[in-house]
Image (cartoon, rainbow, N blue to C red; front, side, top):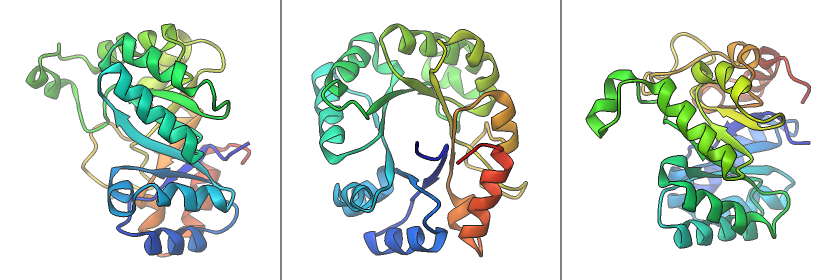
Length: 231
């Protein structure tokens, strides 16, 4: 069972990714590959991690027509990814296409991205939505569950009420995790590992709180302790 602590490898090259994985140590077995590393290094960034026994959360944030979403999910499955993200706002047809495309890859989980953590209530009217992140997250999470997705990506702020709405065993993956009060300010809805655990998150994504730390291995252990989960 992969660790619920997912380390975001938002670095600029395969060499930097390899070096960071080595610095954090063997205990960390779950990594996020997102837009930066995938664009810099391509699919080899996923293959490299999978080849050394790591689980990969491939954060593609697919938001396309259903056939393109299905193609992206199939490619993620062929790479050996364990999780892949699809924007729930792409609609039910796209989510169902993603779930269907994942079926040949039993270990691949489809995660529906609800509302990105940089947005707050005041930002939603700018993109034509009512000013309630909670309402939008709830609507999209229900859609994801009805379409057969395996989980959602949502902030800790929403995790507690999602647990009561979603089916038992549904994954709730929470980004926006800060290890201290001086963490990154480019996300509006953030929380600590302990708060995520208490809210009912099944997984947390931690980036610079670990990778930018003076001792990434120690920071990883701190995240594990804070989340209070058995890794």
